[in-house]
Amino acid sequence: MQASAQPTPNSQDTQIAGKLLDWYDANARRLPWRSPPGETAPDPYRVWLSEVMLQQTTTAAVAPYFTKFTTRWPTVTDLAAADDADVMAAWAGLGYYARARNLLACARAVAAMGGSFPDTEDALRTLPGLGAYTAAAVAAIAFERRAVVVDANVERVVARLFAIKQPLPAARPAIRTAADSITPDSRAGDFAQAMMDLGATICTARSPRCMLCPLRADCRAYAQGAPERLPVKAAKKPKPTRQGRAYWVERDGKVLLVQRAGKGMLGGMRALPDDGWSARGDGDVPLPGEWHPGGVVRHSFTHFDLELQLMLCAANELTSLPVGEWWPVDQIEAAGLPTVFAKAGRLAVAERNT
DNA sequence: TACTCGTGGTA
DNA sequence: TTACCAAGAGT
Image 1 (cartoon, helix red, strand yellow):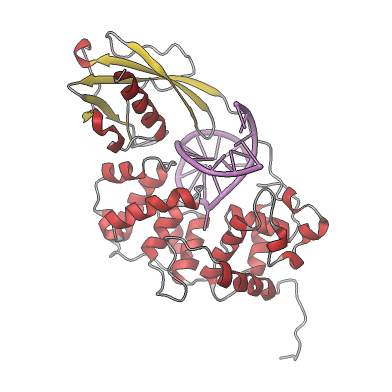
Image 2 (tube, rainbow, N blue to C red):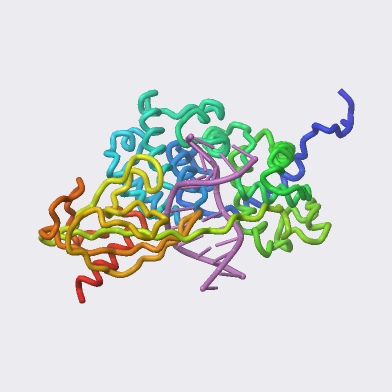
């Protein structure tokens, strides 16, 4: 063993991790799914639940849902035993509903394994809803495994630190290699969360606060003068507008709700009957009867905008009805409708009260 | 690889 | 107001 080791191409930069962890110790955000500093080891169930909820979702949006879920289902076994409809309704409003379907599938898989989550990245990766990011994050945060945890925050921080100018998504392999080179062998969970906190509060997408950054002296993009320009992203496709109709059928103070098909848009969610949101704009009324227009709901999804025409009808004017359940109109907010249908429901109630 | 899949906040 | 953006996964 030599007294002073020479740097090698594979050597790890422990300096950066050290600076970041020092910063994290003083500046970590307090979030409902984090244990208080120096407290007990994190509960894998809570780590996993929070990570799934946080996929493409802000901490502010997640916090009330996390509290609701952990209060109602304190353990993964409790969640595994829940009714699908209850979990889907509890998720309503949080978006990306495939996450809720996979959440239940994962909870039941873990329950079938005895109620304990696997404690390695590879094993976690095989569970429903755990991709490369979430498997690495749970392995690091819940089980203190060294894992290269790369989310959008880490991509941004690393692209700037190393001045990686290749556009996303082509830059992903280079970003992962760079992230690996600064990932420490110890404090894996804290390091992952520190990178995300830095990205969320300092190294932000727009107007990064470099003067507060603990890694400023190490940042090649800062040295080059325009860190906010990284990472480079490909241009996005234009968002089309679709037309659709939703149907409000009422009888004895109750409205007809349906269950959407298991996969696809809003899959598995309770909803108003609709025409499938065809792009035709001439949506035939599938139910013969005396319909009258009840206003338009505008809603923006990830890849299209929707103009949803609300159609109103009394049930006794219809000769046939879709399969569904009659839900009390005065409790419509508790039905667990996705936001677009919650908007339509509020519009219908407003019309009905005029 | 490219596309689908929600929502609410921000500039 | 429009466009971008957030602790991505599945196909």
